[in-house]
Amino acid sequence: MNWEQLDWTALDRLREGFLTGAAAHGPYWQTPSDLASYDATYAERIGWKWDAVLRELASRQWRPPASARTVLDWGCGSGVAGRRVLQAFGAENFDALHLWDHSPLAREFAATRARETFPALTVSPFADAGQPIGLLVVSHVINELPPEALQTLLGLVARAQAVLWVEPGTHAASRQLIGVRETLTPAFDLIAPCPHQGPCGLLSPGNERHWCHFFAPPPMGVQNDSDWVRFGQRAGIDLRSLPYSYLVLEKKPAAAIPPAGAARILGRAEHFKGFARVLSCEAPGVEELELQKRADAELFKQLKKDASHPLYHWERTDRRITGATRV
Image (tube, rainbow, N blue to C red; front, side, top):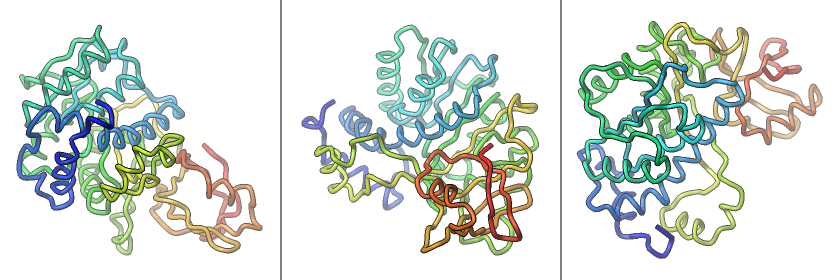
């Protein structure tokens, strides 16, 4: 589908449902055109978030376990998450892609797109027969799930060898995902974004206003593309801002987990005249730290422009950073 073929009426209806919460009340796809228009616009932006997560995993040299030969894209929608994952890790490394969505229209659309993209891969609807699951992919569903549906999903998570889960970067979605995280740590190692395996520091008293989120960069040229600009204006979307929350888990014992003592910046560093402030997540907890520009001018500059979400080992005195080493 190209920009001239977009069904703007459908996109407006979908956007209204996402904003009001009506999307949580059942299937909202009405026609294949809904899905095609969504796949070219909103889903593509979700794909950019997946790209950011998958780039980080590549930089950390993490891949799904070799025994995880199947991918299950649960709540697939148009199927963008499953396709991005297969492109990143190589479809040739998997035997099958299974798709589940409460909408038959979505399952059919996602399957068609996947078969077009990966013609050698077996693609089929997911029929739950209690079988083990290789790689479970979950994307942008948590604010649409009633409690019983979430429990069903967590039952699938328990059977997976690895899980990639990406959600919107809102306070509410992040906090829900943190709740999920805490239930899974007995069986899974945390690969990302958590730099440690302990309880989430954001649950400590005093951190209620904070949340675990990051920002994905849009592809080069998007902000100057007339079609994307028009879409952003109509949808009321800032094309520069792609906040997301996520979890990457692997059944214990995982081959590669974050190194001891690592720290991660949540959100973005705030820059002021002469200093920067970061919300740092590490094993002892989550706390606000400051970096004086004169203490490390290069790090100060790096924190302003780096969107790759690296892990750091801080050099610090109390709550003041004096230097850092990227892990």
